[in-house]
Image (tube, rainbow, N blue to C red; front, side, top):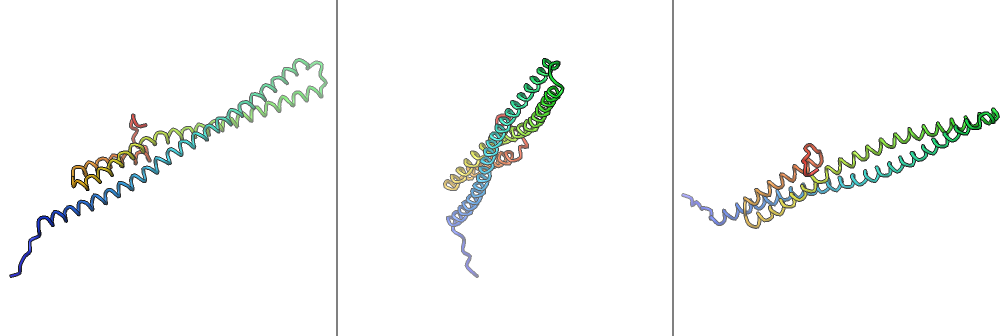
Length: 195
């Protein structure tokens, strides 16, 4: 009859411990990948928010310049119309026609600037909406990053201590962080105190 060698209890514990350590290390690497993706999403949301704010401000400055020009043409048209009424009887037909032609030209320019201003206003409001959307996304990424960093630390502690409870807590923190990160990208749910 062949001898059967029973495994040493300490060796079994060591193998079991190494298996736990490898699993936790693998899961921690996944946490790190999630953290990198979340960090990138938060960074992009912040950049997009700032860029949209800057572009919106530029559009509003452009809008204001168009509004000023529109008002200048309106004032000039009104002045020409008043001059035409005041001097009408004393003006030659050629001068009257010239006044009327200039007043019409000023009116056309006024309308052109009004149309351009409307287009610029629409673009500025679209940029503001983009800015606001990215502003709403940013806090989700911030909290997700914190939770994922905590999960990484807890997983590391669970390796050192061999504590499965700490590892489970890290899974919970990472899950919440992952959900917040996903919500930062998609904004499926609006959490009142975050956005």
